[in-house]
Amino acid sequence: MAIKNNDLLEQENQTLETSASADYGTELSADDTSLTANGDDNESKVDLNELLGAMDLTDGDTQGKTDAQAGNSVADDEAESADEAVSTEQTGNTASEEPTPGEKPAKTRRGVRKKKAEETSVPESDMPLIMEGTPNYSEDATVSTVETPPLLNASEDNQPDISDTLSTPGNMDTPVRSNAPVLTIRSREDVTTEEEREDIIWHEIRNAYRTRRILTGKLGGIEQTDSKKTIAIVDYKGFRIIIPLKEMMIQLPRTSTEQEYSELMLRQNKILNNMLGADIDFIVRGIDSKTFSVVASRREAMLRKRQLFYLDTDSSGTYRIYEGRIVQSRVIAVAEKVIRVEIFGVETSIMARDLAWDWIGDAHERFSVGDEVLVRVQKVRRESLEDISIRVDVKSISQNTSQDNLQKCRVQSKYMGKVTDVHKGVVYIRLSNGVNAIAHSCYDYRTPGKKDDVSFAVTRLDMERGVAVGIITRIIRQNL
Figure 1: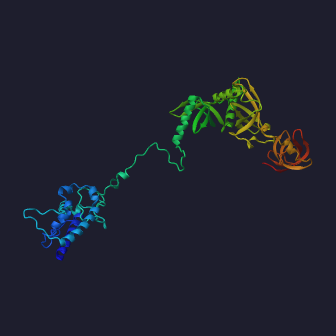
Figure 2 (figure 1 turned 30 degrees about the vertical axis):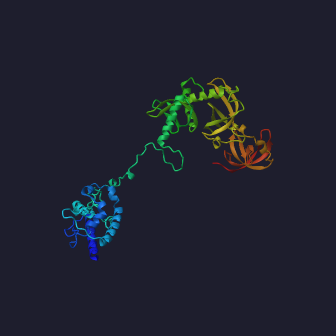
Figure 3 (figure 1 turned 90 degrees about the horizontal axis):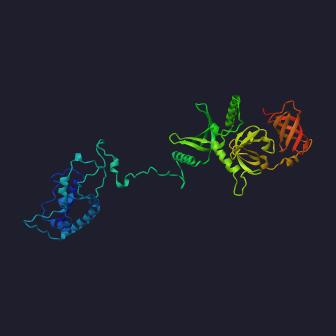
């Protein structure tokens, strides 16, 4: 009985070698394909048939195998190994049975697989190269008839595109939305591209054109057209707005002669040059969507503001702008001794003496074009929509500290100060303690000038005017 068991083990080892050769696609010799050993054909066939009868495969069943069945081969192999162990034990304890003379012996699964492996074996030249160490998960695995892409090819020319191998449903490219929003670093932050921003601004300009809404831009340039006409260029959020000179509403006295008209045009251009960088209001009069050109009028915007703030009244029946009221104004031009402001559609000038309680030598030191300052209305004249004038000042907004500072000075004392202006031989000085001073003479051989640091000696105090009167003893440092 021990001899029979050994014979069965040798048959199984030979069968494993045969199936492994078929799995790797190598040709089998005649000696290797025999499944019997030492003429023991009568033993073990009945026992294997009883154990594996339920798992018999025909040629048609083998050809109908799918990839899903092949994927479960590992689990089948484990079950077969257990069945083979049981078969070995039962062979020793069960008597062999002789097949009936007219009856064909039952096909075993191993025989069917061996025959199928011989039919489907592929020559070595046509088989893909297999990486070393590739595990064989099933000893009795049947060679699948479904062609699968090889892992490696012997020839680089026949190497398949890796994208075809990896194009599984999980790796398929997802559609990309063209209108997806910008992915921002911070959560819930709204970020727009340059193209989107321009579309939004252009849509705003179109709406303002339809509704006649007032827009505000910055005066960015003055140009001469090919027809020798002067136009103002206003920048509105990156868009170029064109305003003709006659629509800028620069009010100057009318002239009757050609020479006076030429001087008037030069004066208008000078005023426009001083207004560069100022914020101005305008109403869109025309647009061209193809070239993104915009033509506007400042005059129409100013007249609408005049009507609303100077001529119309509120619910209580009073004007919105009246004497004594503090209003906000825009600085549109700055000179040495004067600034020009625009107050709700009306332009006016403010002299240096009305800008501050202390003496100002140059208005550029404190004011710039584009500033917004508070002013107090001193007088308003309302004749018509075209004829409205206003007078304002800045210093009345703040408290006058000249009288308090004057108490800090002592007669026959000397103080350091800075020259703010020289007019008709009179030197105006701003002392270091905040007091305004006047000097009619200078002991230094040099002539004092603006922004010079001087030594001032007080001779008397003018309480009515709030100034100190004295002389300049010497010039400490000249501003050359």
